[in-house]
Image 1 (tube, helix red, strand yellow):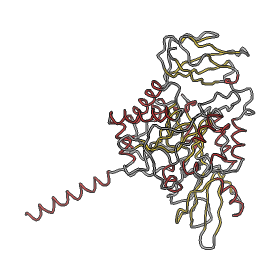
Image 2 (cartoon, rainbow, N blue to C red; image 1 turned 90 degrees about the vertical axis):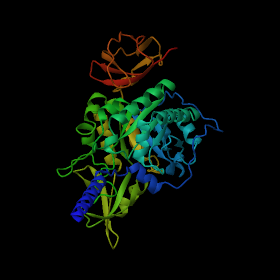
Image 3 (cartoon, one colour; image 1 turned 45 degrees about the vertical axis):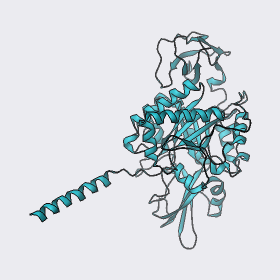
Image 4 (cartoon, one colour; image 1 turned 135 degrees about the vertical axis):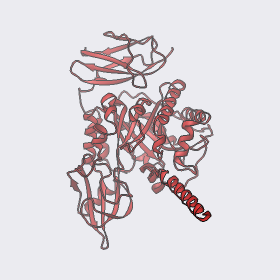
Length: 488
């Protein structure tokens, strides 16, 4: 009898232990973290000291900067140390995101290797390009989910983190913070994350008026994310529209498919229009930034057929390599289902496949952002194109001074003064017929009772902070203007 009881207890213990193991969610690493491990060097990081021994140029107001949308470029430390400065066309960027600042479990923040990047900061500011610090929760000795959850739920550490971000922004004359928290379990991706981001946004706007707060969101909601509220909680959200096929995939395929076929249910178009960001794309497209990849993936495969079984992942590739290597392996093959290119070859032992975007496929993704009136586009990552000029030329063609001539209300209408106290004036030299001017707060909520006249807007009843004026003209053209209400 005792032996049977002992066996039963042992069975229950084993079963309980198995259930615990099975209940532990395994969250795969994102491509930003994986490439930090693949390309990044093991360089000692320093905790913020607040000291600086070089002059930083403040952000310059460049009237000649005529980009029609936001162009947000991530600059990873492994590219910064590889001479990226000489290849970046700062005039074709609205934002330069320095990647990465790493937050630890105690809320301390380590700076990127080689920091401060005075050369890049000054070059960007001189061109009227904002410089953003990207803060990540991975790469340290503490688990990414544990770090994030501690900041979400421990008010003391949250306050310390906020203060550290403020200190870094002030010390290095930065223009905002971008949060790239990955590896968060589904149970921790919802209300707590959104409340944390809303609190950070409110704190930064109150302490540092005019500075920006953004978040890097996934392409696919695999569970737990409340995207509508997350978009509401920040100034803008970067959609990481890549890593649809990861290096660990058992089949070769596109990193960022524009469209999909019947057996695939994931694509950039679906992410934006009918999937993860369907509601934000309709309600607040100006707050979404579609980030696209300048990288690809290389696999050993069973055959030379598209979507072949993979035997191993070789490496991540960069545009500066694939743009020239494709020709040596028979040239690009265009996949009409995904609307992306790839190429294949046999090295004498194995079939190899590389799927990576080129100028043609990136152009189609930019068109998707334009057709959905998104706030802009992003780049992962700067200098992956090296010295090649064609991707910069593509940005200029899509978003530069010659793109959409006469189509943008921002070229014809402006609000001044900005910041303002009681009244903000409307400059409308071409006397464009305005159908409506709606005012939204930083959370994307429509503010009622704001008096909008022909030539001015009464903002005296608004609290200090950041607002968005959504302007619609009689022809149906729409633009959003960022306005700051302050006590003068």
